[in-house]
Each structure stands twice: as structure tokens, then as C-alpha cells.
Length: 608
Ligand code: F6R
Image (tube, rainbow, N blue to C red):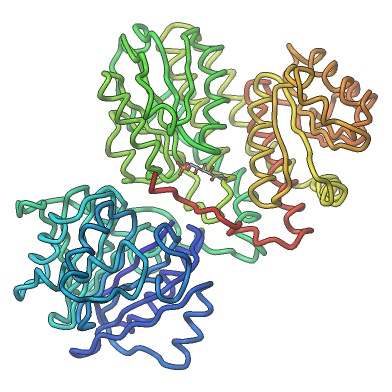
């Protein structure tokens, strides 16, 4: 999705903006650009393709000045091209805008200017906003942006600048995320926190329906109707180094290797030695868990797969019905959310448009909303009644790894807390689970130390047309995520399904040499999964099993076995996910793909 940066201060804006855009590359983009005001001169440079194309232009013609805005575009209206790249200008070139999201009525807005005899240079829904702002301008950029927002409909974040008022940037938020970074004698704007972290960790969030007026002295926020907003900044304790590769070839690999730390941090200080679970940000009162009648889980993609694991944990431990729904489906259903319910919305970014909409729907239906997210201050965290932050740090690679594992751990903590409060777990059971959880970082580290087998197996599946992932129960949930990871970055076709489902149709596709990856950690259904394994083996499948290191049985049936340390079955997904992430990574590496920014995908899907 698109990324925004803005800067007003004493530094050379060009380098701040380019560095900021580089930090946002992980969101996925197809063109980039920036505009810098120097004196009363507006200068714009933009180019289709990777940031290196833009920086080549800037090397030839650097843009001087200390105030500017930049953008990485992920095409929604109009193909990726130089002309469609942001920033966009009005006909005089004095006003520029960048924008994330979608302006729904842009065609109607354009019609007005076409009637006035203007020709538009792009196919975007953004360009017309520069025209509207210029038309509304009466000497005050903030008023012009306010009036432009009143004319536009949609979900967006808009940033505007004019050569007529150098030293000022005005931005507005209607759903798409926008934050301000407060420095000393300098102020930053961005769609994501990591873009400003090298300069400041003092962050101010702009909320929906607000306008922010940014100068080097700071930022003033108002609502659309002009009511001043007093909001304290908060401090983000992410280390900017964690948004860099630190010697790894790819962010994805670095993030896979950070997982032992991430597990430890997500658990950190949340279960005390007497067995009580203290989740900062979660405060639903004493009787809530006892009266709980149903849990809904909603999310998209990898976060949904994390929710599949949560569903089983909550059901097993709490003995309450749990329903999981893709957020993009749930938001258009008329779901029966009644009684005392908890809706768990899971989102790494906390900005996924569908997840936000589904979460709001659940809240409107009277459900208590719990956000499980990685981004402090994200929209989801602010919408929710309770928030549990995963402590994974910034996740840069488009393919989610450490955030997924942190979501699994976060849900384990929630299940333990709710289980204790509901009287389903006694203190000693909680202490036992805590002990198991606390062993996970070391066990995940052990998985990461023995990756040779995974890299070898990766070489053997690079050239296949199709492969399958199977498992039962929690193993099926992990299989879903393993398959998605592989698809995302290797572009190989793969499908995951419950092991018992194969014979109901898909088995027809399993022939001599078809790779089938079987996840085999759940002991109560072990024999059943082995039967599924034998079914594919009998059709000539090449079976790659993922099993505990002390499982001697599996080698009798599988061609290759990937081993993980034994743990409580309910926490096995945390460990089993790791080799599957590595498998996807090594296949993509063999195939020479862009691992951190796979084709067609964006990190944060802030439009529907
Ligand atoms: C896959 C991936 C996506 C996201 C999905 C939801 O690796 O990252 O499937 O999980 O787009 O994103 P969040 O968690 O930010 O809501």
C-alpha cells in the first residue's frame, strides 16, 4: 500500500524523505516521488518503479530545500507510471498533494475541472485534490484542505503543501493512517512509525476526521469543524535498528531469526510466579470471563491463520464456542453476535481496512472488542475496548513471520488468562503452562540452529507445479500458514487442507512425486494424520513430515523429516511455523525472487 512521509525542519529534506520512503518500501509500491519547496519554488521528482529510479533522477538534479513531502504509490486508479506517481500538482504547479487510500467521488470532482477546460495529466484519483485545494485557497492552506475534505468522499490520508506558504505542510486523515513525529525544531509526518524512528520516537497520532498543521515548531491538530484537539504524544520504544537488516540478506530472514526474542518479549512480565496473568491493556472486570458465552475471531491472511490456532486454544481451555471469520466476509454478513461475547480482532498493522470494519461491526452488535496487534497507537488499538500488544517490533518484510508467532503467543496468554478467570485452569495448571511457554524461545532458537535439512528440502521442491500441506487440528492451522508463506514469496501453487479432507476430492491431484508436507505434532490425532500420510504415499507422493525430534514412528512413512523440539501440543504451532517459514524463504531464494517485496502484495492493506 502507499506510503507517506513529510518533513519540515533544518535538514536537507531530500535525504530525510528518501530515507523515509526507503523505510516504507516494505509496504509494497510501484512508483515513488517527492516534492520539496525551496524559497518560493516548488520542485517535484517522481518515477515509476523502485526507489533507485527516483534516486537516480535526484542524483542528476538534486532538490534543495528543508520542507517536503514524499510518497510510494501502490496503484489503485491508473497503471503504475511516471505520470500516475505522486506528488500531483494543480495546473499552476504551486500546490502539491500526496495521498493514500481512495477518493470515491474523484470522477465527479474531475468533471467540474474538465468543464472549466483543464486536462489532467494522470489517471489517478489523487490529482484532482491538488486542483480542489488550489481552487479553495484563500491564503490559508489549512482552510483550503478543510474545504477540499468536505468535497471529497472516501477513505484516505492526504498531505498538501504550497509554494505560497513555505515552511508549512497540512495533512488530513479520513481512515487511512497518519502519524506525526515530533523532533526539536523539526517535525515529521508519515503513514507508518518506522519512517520517523531514526529521528524521533515522540509520536502523535492523527485521528479520523482531523487536520494537522505541521511546521518546524510542531503540529496543531483540529477536527474538520475547526475544534482544536489536545493530544499528548506517546513514546515508541522500538529500536530503529530493528527496522534495518543488520547483516541479514533479507528482512524476512532477519525477522525469522528474531523470533526467539519476540516470543520472550511477548510473554515478558505477563505471567507472575504465582500463576496470575497480568495483561496490560486488558481490563474486562471480574465476571466477564465467567459470563462469556462466545468468542468471535476476525482477521485476514496470516493474522487469520493465527486466529485458527487461537480458536482451538480457546475452545479447548475455556469450553466456550468460538467462531472465526475472515474480516472481509464478516463485515458484509449479518452475524448473530448476541449475549456476552468477546470479539478478538487480530492485525499486525492494526490498520487493515477489512479487519477494522469487521471489528467495528462486532462492537456495534454489542460485543466487547479486544485488539491483538503489533502497532502501538494503531487504529485498531484505539477502536478496541481492550488491547494486547504483541511485542514483535517493526515487521518490514511483506510476508509476515515474527508477528504471526507473536500472535500465537499472545493468544496463548489470553487463553490462560481467560481460563484462570473462568475457573477452567487452576494455579498449578497456569504455572505449568507458563513453564512450557517460557521454554519456547530456547526451543525456537534450536529450530533456527538446525536449518540445513530445510534448505536441502527447499532445493527439491523448487520446480514442482503443485504441492500440498496437510495436518489436523492445530497442525492444519499451521499447514495453512506454511502454504500461504510459500505461495507469497515462491509463487508456487500450494494448497493446505485438513488431512481428512484430501480423500474427498483433492487426492485426485496427488500423483507420482507430488510433494505433500504433513504437519504431525498433535498426539491425540497422530494416528489419524498418519493414515492421511499413507493415503498420499500410496499414490506416489513425496512426503515431507514435520514432527517432534523424538518421534521415531514418522520416519517409517515419510521421505524426509523436519524436526522440532517437543513441547506441549497446544504450543507446537509456535515451533512448527518456523521451519515452514524457512522453507518458503529458501525456495524463494533458489528461485531468485524478491523476497521482502513479493509481486502484487503490500504490507498493510489499508483499502478494501
Ligand atoms: C501474509 C501477510 C498478510 C497479512 C494480512 C493482514 O504474510 O502478511 O496476509 O497477514 O494482510 O494484515 P494485518 O495483520 O496487518 O491485519
